[in-house]
Amino acid sequence: MTSLLRRRARTENADAPVISMVDVGMTYPNGKVALADVNVEIGRGDFVFLVGPSGAGKSTFIRLLIREQLPTTGQVQVAGRDLLHMRRGQVPGLRRRIGIVFQDFRLLPNKTVWENVAFALDVTGTAGTATRQRVPQLLNLVGLHEHAHHLPTQLSGGEQQRTAIARALVHDPAILIADEPTGNLDPVTSWEIIQLLIQINELGTTVLMATHNQEIVNAMRRRVLALEGGHLVRDESAAAYEREY
Image 1: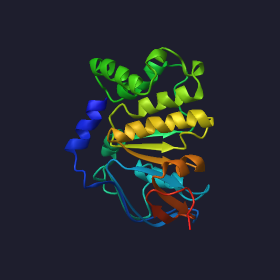
Image 2: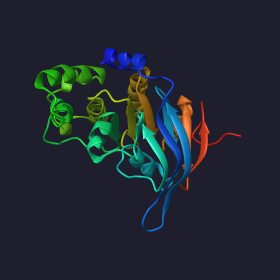
Image 3: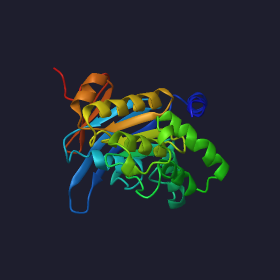
Image 4: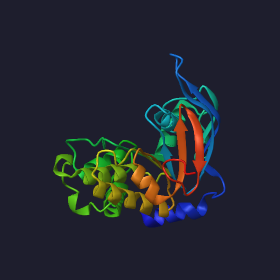
């Protein structure tokens, strides 16, 4: 896993942004403005926090990146691909370039840790030999090699989230989107998950983490994108959760 991530970091164009939004707006049919005039670039290998109150537009921001929705106005590019002019058949390929982790884990309850991770490869037709090589690499990376044959109900919350992270990394994505990944975890376990995300980021994967956890953002001092009422009101490096004066 480590060598795969490092090889990608050397060979891809490090100067091109991995995420680009230009004059992006999103208005729903009921008239609600979810995003307005958003302009942002996220570089390859960045670690970025996306913050803001509930209803600020964070979920819409993420849905646009995975092409679950299209913006009303503006341009969105992810991993060098223009999402507005992408054919429907190209969307699965885009989503293999993006790993996604959610607050509620979303594991398959009747499958083991191994099977949950392998399933993400099986559905794309990956050969069994490749799966048998890839899954152990990922379980070692997230520290779950001893839990490979456990069901989700036999895992702690942190172990379930580690399983979800391993599953999100199966296709060696350029971007890992973590949507409130510590929302259901206690403070100690939350920091363990953050340390894992830092490790993944250091191996070359861009990480975008949406969060309400002020303590984590304030301690890490990474780049912060802050949304309020659909507007990008702050884009600061080495920043805190809230603006500092």
